[in-house]
Amino acid sequence: MLKQRILSALVLVPLVVLAVLRLDIASFGLLVAVALMLGAWEWSALVPLRGLPARAGFLVSALLAVALLWRFAQNELLVNTVLWAAMGGWILVLFWITSPALGGARTPANAAFKFLLGIAVLASTWLALVVLHSRPDQGPRWVLFLLFLIWFADSGAYFAGRQWGKTRLAPLVSPGKTWEGVMGALTVCALFAFGFGRYIGLHGAVLASFTLVCLVTVLFSIAGDLLESLLKRHQGVKDSGTLIPGHGGMLDRIDSLLAAAPVFAFGLRWIEL
Image (cartoon, rainbow, N blue to C red; front, side, top):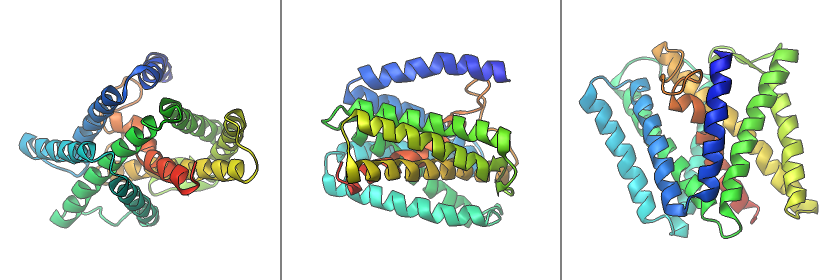
């Protein structure tokens, strides 16, 4: 399994980096939409929706939401509204994670909630990534920074958790995660964010604010991971799919990004960077 994970990463990471840096905004938006639609298909099984028509309906709904945002992506009021709503939504998700039994029963109301949540999460992630990529100050660089921030957070949490992990973070949702892992992720990412901030010429209060935004982004990326774990636990599955060898499904790879992207985009706007 570890060998498969490493091989898949060696293939996928360079391709992702190349796509972020070389694609124009329209092509990048389309590529992100394709990736998120793969995730939408897997989310439909976690609602759960049974049968091809129901799952296809979810996929079409997610695609329509993305298409609508694409149509108005240059409207600052819309962008700010979506990012504010995403921040509020992810704060509510934090409370949900502390009460994982909520929404576990297979009722029409719970299915409807997870259906709408999936549409909102996927669409807001798409918008946040496109907004970042289209920034006039080397937008692709900001997307790449966000991806590396998440990857460093995952690595820091993994190694710190293995070395020192004792205190479970959310034992009823994801027993393998620990508070020591969280601290490892925050430590690594604080150094990375500070170094990147200095590299692009940030100083003083602006540098401190940027580093804080990155740390908050890391915390919410963990929430994104835990949300997917919660949905999988409700359905009694280990992975969201089998698309990527050694890594599971698309959602298993982008779960952290689902929360991190809108939070990071919101944070940069909040500190006027």
